[in-house]
Image (cartoon, protein in one colour):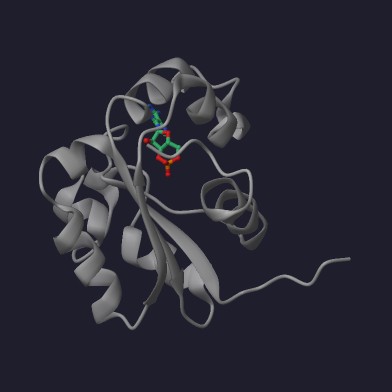
Length: 144
Ligand code: CMP
């Protein structure tokens, strides 16, 4: 079995947050918490790329809307490193619904609603490896 790397995670700034000029403010929050930026990529997801990325949600009622939203404009993806990175990033990001997220989290500060929640971060080490591979690996999702 391939060993799990617990030091890396992904942070994706969603299209409306990129359009709203929030990339710098959001990544600064990660850097302030000692995440090291290993790689960065700005690109647009096609509908089919977004469907692959969010495959785990394919049966959810919000899937079509989510895929359209995530392919509506450029996104900014950061490959970040820190001890226990997935957990530390989930704490910084907050809950899926900005309204329920704790003060000081990215989603509380910059999220608009449950769909337009500013950022995405993987919720498990397994998903982090899969998503890092999709965005930064060989055969990565299309880059503009
Ligand atoms: P994210 O962390 O990117 O993972 C899946 C995304 O689906 C989530 O953030 C939201 O953008 C969106 N999402 C989750 N739950 C809902 C919901 N109930 N209604 C609309 N969008 C949702």
